[in-house]
Length: 321
Image (cartoon, rainbow, N blue to C red; front, side):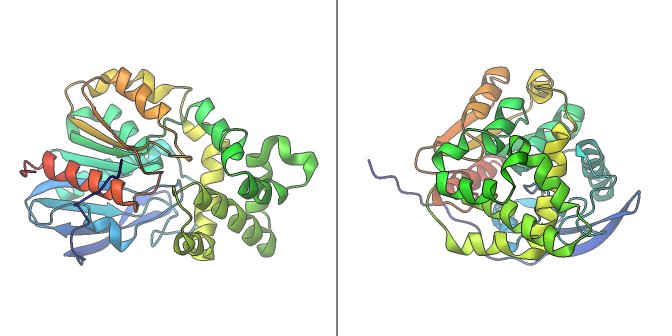
């Protein structure tokens, strides 16, 4: 069966507003707003932890129907301080999202996130269900023990075997029983060369599991120190701290999502965040519409994922198919 997709990203768009929001504790967040002021509100949560925004992220909504806020999370992108891990955790970011909503004076808004962004979206919606009009999730990651182990102990390593050897091979054999801890030690080293080398290998491993087919352009982006350093440092810290969540906390609290419309767009061949998490969430939150893309992996840039996300935002804005 050949699958085809007719929905693509909306045309390139520039923000109608940009700024920095001081959220305290030494952190200031870069944000931008796109679309039509006064239209359906939405917030975009990027991946990582430690990723950042890109211009393509602005294009997942019809700008005539949405008023979208996008921001770089603590330590990411243009937010300051760069690559900071101090005062940076899941629940602080959840409160940052709420501060941004208050800044925009929205009563409620659509919460849109993929991968770590989906984790964060669930954490926010479970704490502030009354502020969440609807959810759009991609590549669900629930931060459970089994999902963390899949990515950094055993699982993805069997599928991306050559890339795993490069990633694990950067660490001496004696330390490989806990790769996250070993990498974190290097990512926080006083030696810049040590930090950069570890950041590159961590980021390239993440890049290798992001797409169904190899993507050289994406791998070059992941190797860029300006992106690799904050991504690797912050990501390793969050993994080391179990994402500041109790085991299965997001799944156990999924009952708080009752009554909130939601759509999950999930790649069948997602090596980074396998479909088991999305299915577990669907069982805990029966109202959500789980849409499996059978010829896609993890990345939001894959044709089937783009098609699914754009259709989701259109539908939730009441736009006819």
